[in-house]
Image (cartoon, rainbow, N blue to C red; front, side):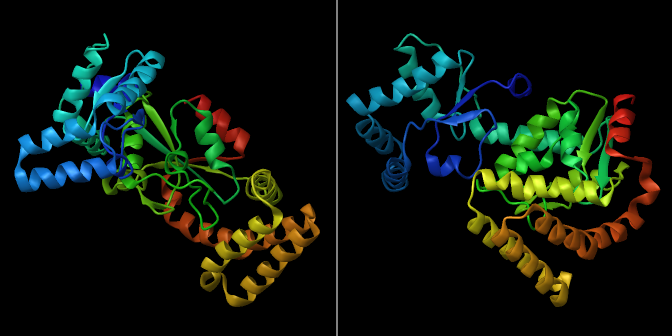
Length: 342
């Protein structure tokens, strides 16, 4: 049943308190708590001191009359928009059973996930564990920074965009304004995405194990680094142009020149030791000038310097260890055509 729920991407009402939800949830879930954080804490304290019966009585006293009606109506509104909804709480026990009964009194018979989030989580972990040795063929899309590997992977229905799941572009400059998901949510999303990618071939972008502050599960990553690779070979100027559009032009649509300039300089500082202080000072100054003048050509200069003096050297070193796994190398368009024919 649980695999079917995940395959069908059934909308889920997560009844847990916000603090529980914030630590990890399912990708199709919406947090509509039966108890909020302060209420849950009171009930939990009572349970530990006085037992289950007293805790249950307190829970009912906290969520009654208008409060209860408001919470039930929030579930009803969600269910009206998502008629196939299911309920879950932490272990599929008391909270989801109570919510199910309250909804029943409103004429709605909504299934609950027996075993709750704990069982859903275990199911996701099993999916990732089994992915390590299933019969699918994995292909890793590699290429120098700025080759738009992400764009290629996401173009195919059998591509799994790990950076989208992690909400991070995977480099020192890869953060977005919105936060990354909790590790548990990232792993659950990866498991569900993998389960629903039914092709015999699956594409991933070449990644470090860490994507921002998130980490690809160990066995999953071990399979990635032992899979065949396809290399996108794009000219330097095309890569510079892609990076400018993604990291500067697009970023300026949601933040000011000053804030983006300061952000990029902070991110540059993180790699200053590996870049070398002389290169760091040159590129840092170029970033400042480019934003002061708001000049595209000035931006191209610091981007090209960063690629040639840092990212390309690092890629060449890493590629030397991977070249025996390479099955094809070509331009972005050539690689797209090659994959289409697989």
